[in-house]
Length: 512
Image 1: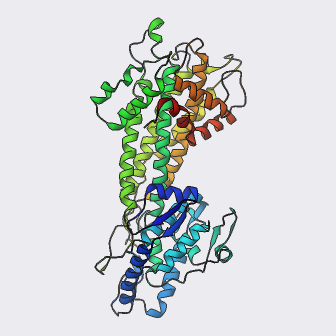
Image 2 (image 1 turned 90 degrees about the horizontal axis):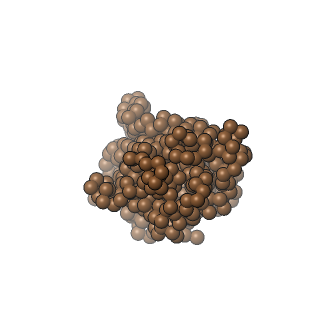
Image 3 (image 1 turned 120 degrees about the vertical axis):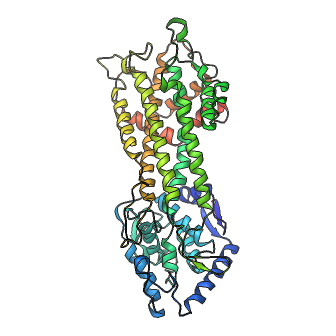
């Protein structure tokens, strides 16, 4: 099994995905443990002094004015976890919780939070045991950290609350820890606060969304090329010299992807022989511009994610010179903005894909294809309602594109009077990414069927490879009406797993 080593310097997107999705083992380096121990000594020294220090010997948030005596500090740390574990609604996905825990571990290992090495090592043990705390959909405002989600994780560390075992069964956390010989942690000064005060949930979801969107944008380039081919469109708009004079890198990459898929096609430009068109519709001609803008948005989001992956987000923090300082680094605005931006890009990419699908199904605009790509139009409905489903998904994605990050709602007696709503932005982006995969899958079903209906015309080698792979995946070709949902589900799984990209790359070479 792959092992991820946690250092003081942060982590990578690849490591987050390895832990969250692939169950990679986590090891904290000796250097990180030494830095953690050094920072802890600073906290212990401050705790022994009479002067109040936020998070060490005071209450929290709006209650920070109260000095807490030494005999109540362990109770204070337990209480903040218990009281903040106030999430509601359905459980969030296992991969999200694992990403959340791993990213919190990353910050704890930085040597800036002041927890004991024991806390860091126990969190790694819980991840390695496959124990996943029950975390709920609602409870984070994306400021002062993803408080409720992280609190539910900290509750497991304490041996309280519920968690899911490696067998997928939810049981009391204390029972799961005992089965894996993990001792619950008795929290001390600063530790409860340090476990809760980060942007880890929204960041984990951003990292995974970036990976998924990268694959989906490439898949959308392929389906756009297939649709262009099925509609007998012109590939001349993909010429590199046209994209060089508007030098957005994403646009050039998408145009190059489409050109590679269409190389050697016997369908592109065929319409000019018997049904001249001056230009193809925008949904065909402007596909690289729209997908390319999505690519460039994704590149910016990855830049923000990489910065955040290198960060140590906590309040207060222990600086290398021994100072313990309050700060606002827990505010989720940088992450929330790009989460919202990606939802906009995903919605527009879905919107243009749906327009291409509709064009394939409309006999008045498809240049000779049967209505709805039906076997016997009138008796058969073909892919009519598949496009309805696609349209419903696009409509929802437009609603999901409304930014969460512009909506702040004050909390904590107006102490936390401006919040990022980054967790909410991340949750709606996950829904949008899943919907985009379904939209692309419907276009794939329509475009491959349409290409096969162009009898006597030979598609490109890459298109033939895509056709062969999608049929092998259980998506049937042209013919009479049948139960369509299984075909759409098979196409969705095919796209989501990256199999469309994998099918054409042996012909095209690596795509962007």
